[in-house]
Length: 224
Image (cartoon, rainbow, N blue to C red; front, side, top):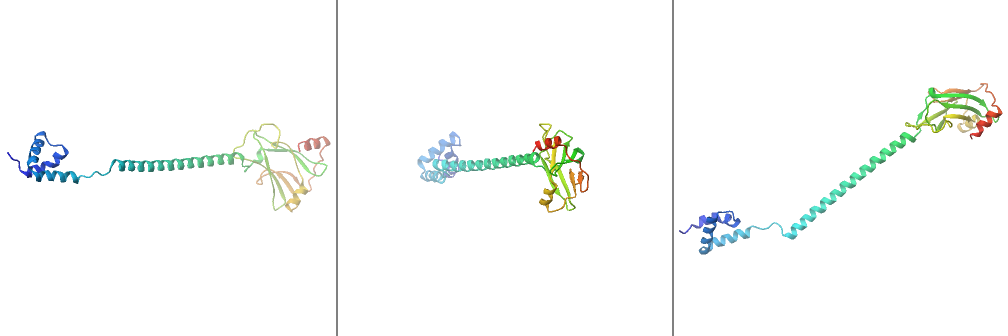
């Protein structure tokens, strides 16, 4: 029995994709032997299905995507590395600031001043002891508008333990009042050891200061 072309036309897409039954395929094969119209229609169906990319184009597309991916990954890596370096720099700077920047005045409660005396050249000498086990490397000099001169021991936020029993934290020092007056352009009327908020008075104008013995003066000058 001859099958109508309309039926074959409906089957051609399935025939072309090879998803119809064996019986339907045989029927279409038999019909196409004698029907040029349906055969032409099958050819038109084949030519209308265009491959989106050749193998070369697919490879090119893949390479472009890979290059974009690699570039993005490199940029992300460089950004991450830059952020890591910045964080390390901030941490290192913060650590150095906490351990090296001498910005904290030592409380007067920790200071013990003794042996205040005058050397043969007129300098004022004293013995300072800081009553804790931490290092001391800096004493800041400040002259206030009222002529008060402050020697303020300064430390960093994080201060290490003193490695020896002698040093600024436990030793003699001296002050040249005349030199400080020349530097500041102001008459100095008193001298304190400690922070400006509450230093220990070690000298004021008119105070009777004992002369240092020859042995003590030699000991003081030996440190300088």
